Length: 118
Image (cartoon, rainbow, N blue to C red; front, side, top):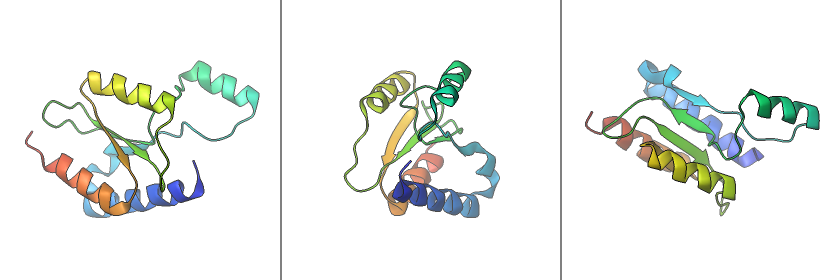
C-alpha cells in the first residue's frame, strides 16, 4: 500500500474506533498487498491470499448486505483488474463494496451503511 493510502487508512481506523467503539473489532484490515520476496509470496498464496481483496472489511450485516469491503485509493488511483473482479464477485454475493479516497468520504459511507435499516 502506498504511503498516502496507508495514512488515509490509519485515519479512517482511528476515527471509526473513536466514534464506534462498540464495533471496533468488526472493522479490520486485510494486509493483502505490498512487496514481498518470492518465498513469502508463495507461502501467503498457499495460505489463502487472493489478489484484489480490498484493504478493509466491516463485518456488520445491513439490509441485503453481509458486510462491507472498503478499498483505499489516493488521488486518481483506480482499481486494478484483480480488484475490479473481486468487487464484481463480492457484489454478486451481497457484499457492499466501496472505494474511499478521503476521510470525509469514509465517514459518510460508514455512517450511512451502519445507520441503514437492519
